[in-house]
Amino acid sequence: MLRILPLCLVALICAACQPRMPLTRTEASSAARNWCIRDGLAWGDPVEVSPPTEADSEGRRWWKVRFAGDGRIALVNADSGWVKQAP
Image 1 (tube, helix red, strand yellow):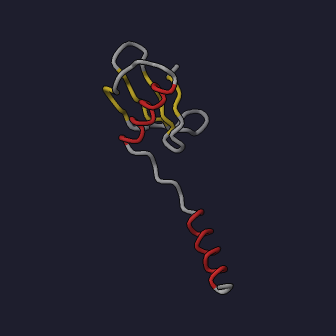
Image 2: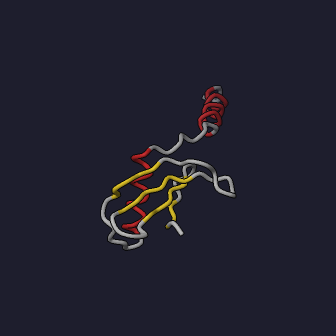
Image 3: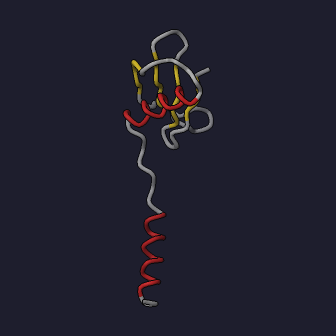
């Protein structure tokens, strides 16, 4: 049993060091929709999801998720999935 313990530890360390997969269009859309629901915004379903382009001044890239109506745009961080409303 004690011989298996080091192998298990090595396997856990290797699994924890795997890089995060980039967000897909569906995940970005879902993250924005869930953000709307959490904040009580009745924006409905996204009508357009644009992939990230250039990085901003802080080096972050954002998915742009547009909902029906003026000014209803959520930005989803391409690396972390964090959502914020567009300025």
